[in-house]
Length: 425
Image 1 (tube, helix red, strand yellow):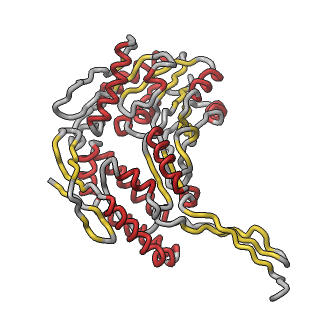
Image 2: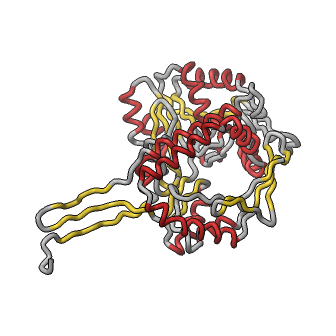
């Protein structure tokens, strides 16, 4: 069994208590992680603040070299790291390797970014310049890593030594983070939940589109903030699409992520498993029909496995359409009128991402421009890249990550004014 430590001021640090880490494919303990005390958080914050002056004095090129070095370490050790990631999260080894490769890409592309300095006015009398300065203890910077229980989050959001908080999670928890951080007016980036619509036009090649849309919905077994969580299929192709979807879903194996034949892993933890089960219970109690899947063990003794499950055209006000399950259950919905499907797609308090699929690119873009979401993809679902901003509209978040705009979120804007012809000069 593996034991892990905090990293505080460059040293490995243990805590009096630990939390067990279970492999969701077996529900067996695979590791222990320390539960940080409030004093250890104070130590981590103090270490970061003490390191900030020297770190921020380094040039952007010097800091970029550190990111490049970290990318190299991850790349060199992907074989080891993917085993750890799969044992803790459950995803397949292929998916774990893809995620770690993404971390390498993100680090290297971020290393290429530079904070801009912009001249606003420059004439004989005045020069005004805007530049960006780091907010404080936030990446890129000296790294401290600590783990904890439910008490750690509130300590972080109210800590007077922390100037910036970035949180990824549910919208409900994000609201609590925002309220707590407001006591110190901390800068925030919140990447929250999504209930992303995918609108499929009648001219798609159904046989070719189904595999792409299956994985758009169920990558990481549906445990992804940005995924196709409502599939709106035009009535002209609905039956054919449903048949192809059933065929493809039956070809996908759900199992232990270490099994080379597995394509989907388990739900990550028992609490989330129980939450996903409420969606299955609601579908069954209301008499809706499963196209595929639907059989779930309410009291699993082994792995937390749920088969890929699709629901046949449930009502628009049903739980599976209105709420985000964050698991492998997805509604297949029929549409006929363009204005109506756009209205239905936007009829949510969430707006993280969305997608539109079709051969007529003019129609695809026309619809995409009317969708209320932070990222709208056309003929793909790949909303997060290291090159462009990623963030939610509505209750799906505040601020953005990635790209130059994501980097700017970790800085404050500062204006310099110079009066060139001062009387005393």
